[in-house]
Length: 70
Image 1 (spheres, helix red, strand yellow):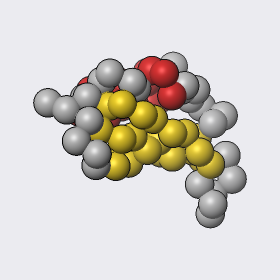
Image 2 (image 1 turned 45 degrees about the horizontal axis):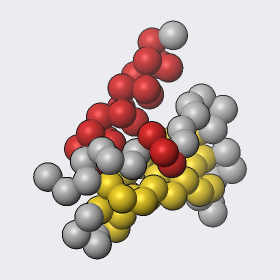
Image 3 (image 1 turned 135 degrees about the horizontal axis):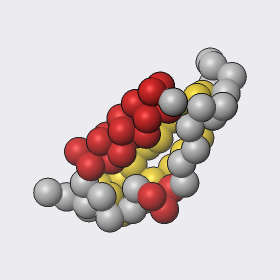
């Protein structure tokens, strides 16, 4: 599995308070991991470096579910 070498978190252009997580994999392909609302979740780019794409999606999903259950 290819690891993430770069992650960029940036605001989406059409929704206020919503960020997009985009990653670059070792093979050079760019993928969007997902989106989240900044008033609900917090992430840093460093959290995604070294993860696989699947692990990055799991991280986003687990944190989102934890927020929804709180």
